Length: 175
Image (cartoon, rainbow, N blue to C red; front, side, top):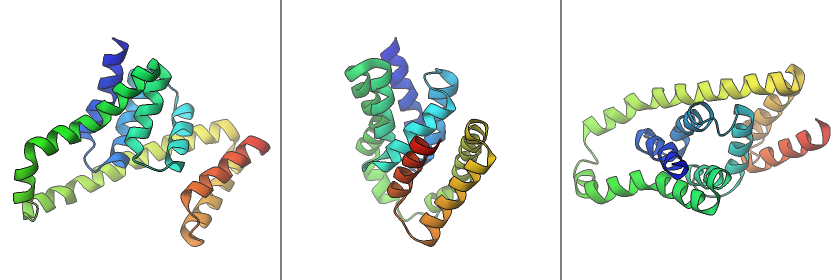
């Protein structure tokens, strides 16, 4: 039953996560944190930060880590398969239809309507992470990390992986 739950925890977000890995992060968080309670928000945010610092698609990295954490190597394989299965199945079945309608105005409109929903889901997840940080390390530490990260990524154009690594070091040595 555990492997079935791992499969569902990544297959459902894979189906509903229109827009790729970043769009499925809040859906995976809902499954992992709220539904199955395999992690708390703090653990999920740390796993997400680590996964974002590594190369490759975020959904498969999350699935591999959480699957391994819950079910060992087989759990990791089940999780990664569940994360890629929806895209694989849809591409195989609908490749011809997608190619035929790729320039359709209806498809472009659908994409425009879905983007705000994805933005709201990511915003809610960011707010939850902020609340956890605020409770865990306090307002001033949280504000320092947020402002520093913003300045480094947006103003100085430092790669996010380096900023995440610096935050790990800062948290490990100073917090």
